[in-house]
Length: 218
Image 1 (tube, rainbow, N blue to C red):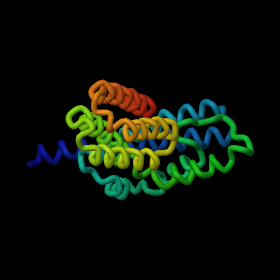
Image 2: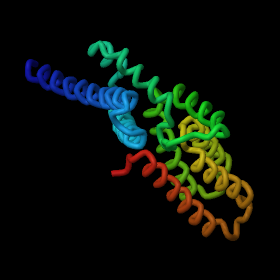
Image 3: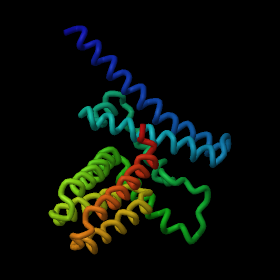
């Protein structure tokens, strides 16, 4: 019993250390950026890399049914964590353009609001997107156009999740294009097999781009 407790304590300690390091990396980089110690490009790069690691960390918690709020409370670390979220709300987490013209102001504001409302949900959304991509490809390969209503529902779910995830506009456009193509060609029974193979391949390429964009692919 004692050994189990020690193992659990060590695991909890590792999780807390990882979270502490990730949050403080962003906080320290932000302070240095404000003080002019580091340049904007370096700051953006540093934060982008750390966000990817923070995303992986949150996915790990989600997959292992570990409650982030419990960890934050135990560490008395909530203020630091949510200060980090506020910082992320000021920048675009995935694209990091160096400057924004006046014309881009409204788009940047919209992007920041999206990031603010979804950053705590990113792990769950990431898993939903991954699941939707895989389910969609499997359904097309197994069912083809025979159950178009099922395919349609998966497309809708995938697009909803992509809309919630900041920085995925380009992928969403590609998925929309494929979705429209499926709806248009779903009655073409004679060429269905070849068409489905092409569509599945296209979806897989988008899925790989999604993984690469988040730096989640091993």
